[in-house]
Length: 272
Image 1: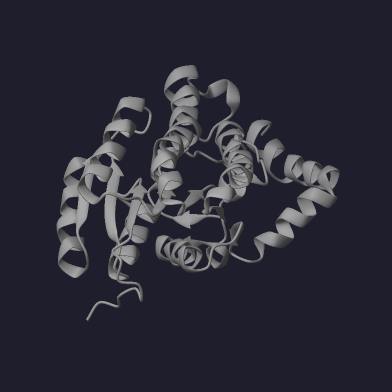
Image 2: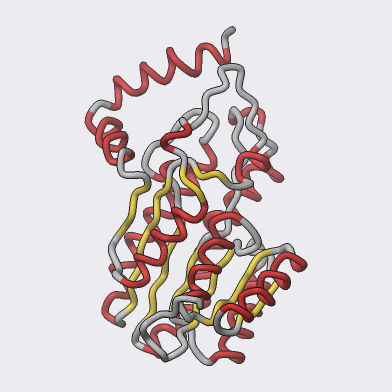
């Protein structure tokens, strides 16, 4: 029997980027705990298959194909959610992608503009669209899925890091704006996650540098962290816990980190 959430008031959660990876895992977990889940992503077939599956194991699930780079898609999706369910209790802003290469090699439009459009502007638009409903309710929880790249910027991540630093700043400012309405705002900062991210990011490295397997997270690991936040809201979650040490080193010894990254990664990649 599916484990159900203790509350019986049929909360509604919107999950963006729900067709795979972290979004799909989070949607499954929320549905198992009794949430009515609104699934948003571009891949219609995957969304509809997942919505059918979740409607069997838990509460109702609604698939809304949407491109988060288009404001009209976001506004339509939020309006459809409110018309169908009359409320929005949780927004999981998960949609995003990476284009990882040296800045001069990135396409100005299909790489740089498109990434910022989805990862940052789409997240902001999505949040803005749900806020009036949450303010009317005097409750809600916005969970922004960022990245360790929002704390530590590394070579080939320049635009991705810019988007995630932006998400971190937006998350902190928004928390202070909307808390008076009973709305919680949280940031999730995972390290490397085993999803489709690397397949689409175009990573090509001579050194083969990547996240060590012992530090790599699964999509389900991040989904569990998201659900824990839903139950017990916090300002942020950093995953896995050793990444706190990495953030500390980067903050306290930036010159040492710069030197090490240059010698161990940049020079072998660019000069050899």
